Amino acid sequence: MTRTPAPTKGPAPALGAPRAARPARPHGQWKVDGTTPLNANEEFKAVDNALNVRERIENIYSKQGFGSIEDTDLHGRFRWWGLYTQRKPGIDGGRTAQLEPHELEDSYFMLRVRTDGQALPPAALRVLGDISTDFGRGSADITDRQNIQYHWIEIENIPEIWRRLESVGLETTTACGDSPRGFLGSPVAGIAADEIIDPTPVILEIKKRYIGDPDLANLPRKFKTAITGHPSLDVVHEINDISLVGVVHPELGPGYDLWVGGALSTVPRLGERLGAFVTEEQAADVWHGIIRIFRDYGYRRLRNKARLKFLLADWGTEKLRAVLETEYLGYALADGPAPQAPTRPGDHVGVHEQKDGNLYVGAAPVVGRVGGNTLSGLADLIEKVGAESARLTAHQKVVVLGVPPQNLDVLLAGLEPLGLTARPSLFRRSTIACTGIEFCKLAIVDTKDTTARVITELEEKLADVSAKIERPIELNVNGCPNSCARIQTADIGLKGQIITVDGEQMPGFQVHLGGGLVREGRDEAGLGRTVRGLKVPAHEVSDYVDRIVRRYEQQRTPGETFAKWAHRADEDHLS
Image (cartoon, rainbow, N blue to C red; front, side, top):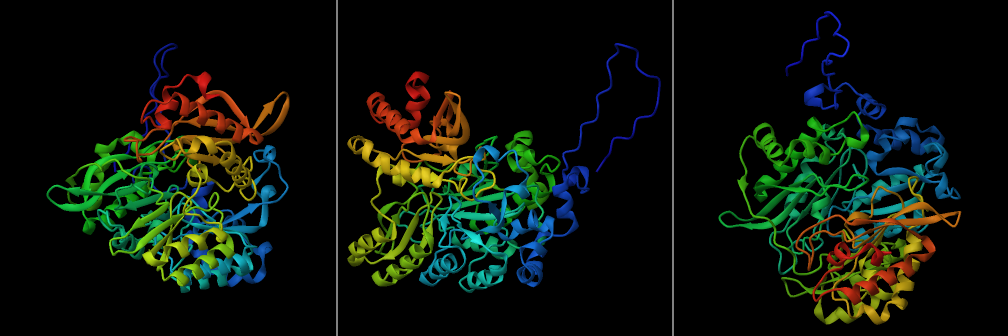
C-alpha cells in the first residue's frame, strides 16, 4: 500500500492563486485506510468481537437481569444475536426523533430467529409456537426476510430460548448487526416441478462454513443474501447485497447468475448483474469473496454510506468483478445468461404441484402476524394431513410442503381457523407491513393494525373490481423512511410520517407508486415515483387505495400492469 508523502512547507500561495487540493477524508476502508476505528460504532466492534457477548448473556445478564447489561453490549453487540430493545409503550410518533434511544426503549426485547429458507417440520413449528406462548406474550411475526420475530422477550429467558431453537436446528446467530444476516431462500427449494436448480446445498454449505465466523462478524454494516433456483424469482433478488439466481448456462448447465449491491432504505439502489455464471461448486467461495470485499473495502467512516451499494456505485460492476476474481477467488468466472422474466407470482400462494406428485400450498396470514397458537396449530395440521413441513416466504407468507392430494381439502379448511388462507383476497395476498410504532424505536406511525384494518375495508370496497384485475397489486406499508417493508418497490408504497392537515398533526403516509421487482407481467425492476405533495392520513388509506385502484382499472390499456400505468398517469390522477 502506498501513501502520499506529507507536503513540505513552502511559501503561502498568492492571494487569489488556486489552492492545492485538500486530501480526501478516509472512507474507513480497511485495505486502503487501515483498521483504526473512525467512529463510535467501529470502536466498540474493535474492542470486543460482537459474537463474544453470548457468553455474557448466558452467564451474567440472564442471571443478574436487565439492569446489569453493559451499554455497548445492550445497544451494540446484542444485535449479533438477534436482540434489540423494543419501544416503550405510549410514546407517540412525533417524539421518535426527539428522544434519545434509552428514552424510547423498554426493558423487553425483540428477538429475531433466522430460518434461511429451511423447511420447518412440525417439531420446529411447535418450538417456535411454544417460545411465543411461553416467553413472548403470544407474539410472532413472519418478516419479509423469512425470519420469525418475537416481542416481549426478557433477558432472563434468552438461554432457554436458544436451547429450544438449537434443538430443532434454528438459531439467532448474526440475525442482526453488522454481519451476514439471515438468508432468503426459495420456499419451494427441492420440491417444485419447474425448479431450475435446488439452492439448498449452497445455503447449507455457506452456513456451515461461515455463519458465526468471527472473521465475518465485523462488517461495515449489514449484509443480506438471497439464493433461489426457481423461475418465479421468489427471493426479491434485486434488493440484496448478494443474490444467486438460478439460470441454465448453454454449456455448463444449471447454476447461478450473480447479482450484487442491492438495498433500499433512504437511498434505494437496485442490485446489478456482474455478468458472471456461478456453478454450484463455486457458489460458497463466491459468496465468501463478495462478503470479504465488503468487509475489506466497504466504507466505514459514515454509517449512512456503509453498505455495499455505495462501493458498487463508485467502483462499477467491471471493477468489482475483477477484484473478486483476482484478489479473492484466484480464477475467472464464466460469463453467463440473465434470468428469464417469471411467468407466475413468486409468493407461491395457492395450490401447486410438486415434482413427486404431492402438492405445496401457499397461505397468507394478515400482514405476517401469526402468533404462538397459529404456529403450534399449523404443526398439528401438517401432521393431521400427512404433509411434511412448512417454509416462510419473502412476502410474509407460509408454504406447506408435501401435501398428499387426497388431503388437500382438509388442509385448506384447517388453515382458515388458524388465520391463514390459501385463497386470499387481492390485498390480503399482496400487502406487507413492517413492525411499526407498536414495538419499533425508529417508527413514526402504526403499521400492523392500520394495515389489517385497511385490508378488511378494501375487501369490501373493492369487491366489485378485484375480479377484473388479473395480477396482485402490491401494497407495502412502512412506519418510517427505512423501507423494511420495501415501499420503493411496491405498486403502492406508503412511508409513515407525521403530517399536518388543516393545522392538525396526525399519523399519515407519503405515497410511492409504480415500483416493482421483476415478476409476472413485468420484465424489469424499477423504483416507484413519489407523488409530489401527496400525504394521506392514516385513517384515509383505504379510501385512497380504493380511489387509485379504480382509476387504474378504468384507464389501463389491455395487459397493462399497475406499475406501468402509475408511471405514465398524470399526477392529478394519482392523488
